[in-house]
Length: 537
Image (tube, rainbow, N blue to C red):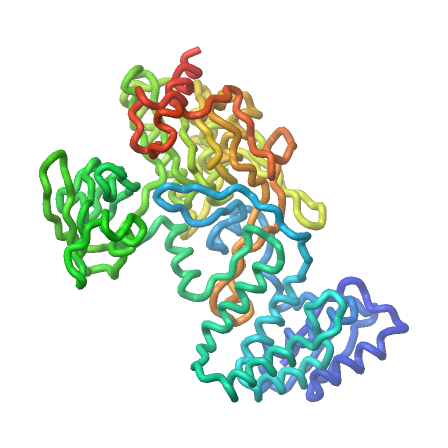
């Protein structure tokens, strides 16, 4: 078995023998040699060797000497262009937490100074933690990797040995049973939290699969969008998914769910609370959710079979005060959003709309492929959408142009004939303090190209991009998300921590400030009224 590693920087000739000796000690059964200019190292191993553990051991050993090693045959996931990223990862760079019925990102908090940790170091930590779940494996790892490998700033502790010792103490003396998988998951979550990256996350296998499904717009449920109802206490149905099981059963928008039937009895939402009540609707496809709704003054009983449904991220309506204005609400930018956006725009245009309000209030963001797809419909061909600035200072620009995606991101594809399809319509964009990430870029790009008037209040302020990296590349389940770049709108001024200030600064009326935006009528929504007025000027 042959492994080849590319080295950065090249190994100086005076250190060649020292490093070869260390590598041969790390893998005694291997043959190790540099190429002529010492920019690569070749490792020949017995066929029975664990390839992944050996490769990680070599990478980590070289890192200790100050050389970054990239395996030529099993490299890190490519940065590539947006199309390849969108196809390969769960959520291409611009990302936030999965949306809730009422997305509400909390304000950024002060973070300690970030400690930089190389991805190669993180991967070897995975090996260390997995093997250190037993004392025997911990000692084997120390033999393979050598001593004094540390994540501490001063190099004073052998972290592999320390994990193994702590694990052995619990195994020998602890009165509680250990769950090895849970220990591993929690250790990795702690590692991610300690990096200081506020948007980083670790996903175990089940969480990663759920993330993939969410990004594809898939979920199992009864097919409704809901918010909390305060009077009467309950779960207010804002929207019923077309073709979903709730629609088939006769549930309507405006219904208020007041009771849920469970094994514990017929529980009132007012008694158990909104969030606990929502959790009662979770269940596998094919199981039945039984509940009572209040429709006007009439109580109605429903039994709805849960099923896999497709989430909807775009909804539209013709203004009740001006039939020439179409209102398009985008709740997030998911893989299906560009296709949904085009369909809603065509429906509104067919209804006679010639001016449009795009509502991205409470929109937490989404994927780069989705935001580029939607903006490609709204901007002239070859308009700059954003510039990503990577850690090493290199940049990547995204433009409004025809693009073809496959698999999960096929709905982000835009035909050449559709580039700039809606660019000549008058537009305004509604934003608020919960408009974040890709939604902020949506507003900023239309502002910078002078295509839309922004109305509302300053946005959240998230101008950094994340990437989801599946750990299957190295033979492990799950994935990590981490911040990998800043992205600038067309004007070139990053808004991270600052937000995007609208042209017309207008807070929501105090009289309805505590009411969910989805429940406001056009007459109650002063921000929407101002956005409609803006497209009529």
